[in-house]
Image 1 (cartoon, each protein chain N blue to C red):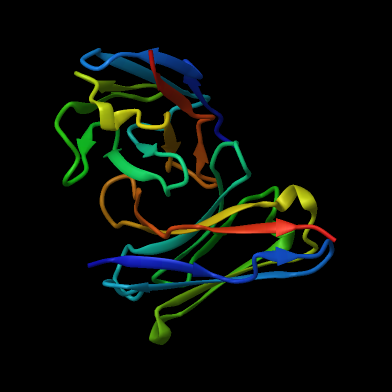
Image 2: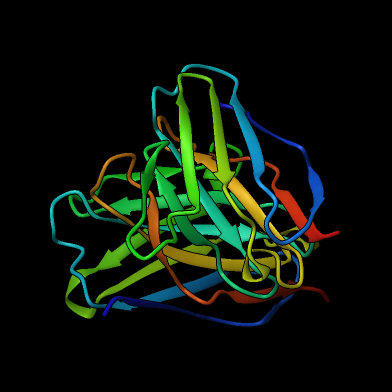
Length: 110
Length: 121
């Protein structure tokens, strides 16, 4: 299985901060990398697909980059709704089954 | 409007078989490239991919659970069914179904609300 390792596991930030979350794959996954946001008690929501494509309706403050084994999710200016009740972000590889998720990065208000 | 909804028991006993149904609308599982998958999340833990079935009946399973899982579809009813045998308390989790899009990297672009399944005697 391809292992997906996110860092950091958690972070504290303030409104307006720029936030970067990284995801490393244990082997080359080209750009078969997706990012999701999950708020407490809710299903995950797709933010970024294919490493850098913004899902329709997702604010442009979210962006993704990377290829092969190293990827990142950037939030240019954190908004209150981005970490209401502590939000968790997950990366996922869909290069080969079993599709695997990272362990998650929890973002909380500083 | 695309929606998915999971249904099934909220409580199962150890060794029993779990059957979950995902009923969806707004898309067809006969459309080329589309799939429906199952993902679970134990309380307070990360997401775990379980299985997926595609428009062409191609099925893939998590290797660690493959012997216990069966995924099937009824295109006419817009349903996907997941069965998991020999349930154990460690299988307690929220189970989600989600559509795998045909776009690049085939992300899960629409998710059900999830259903919490507790395994306990």
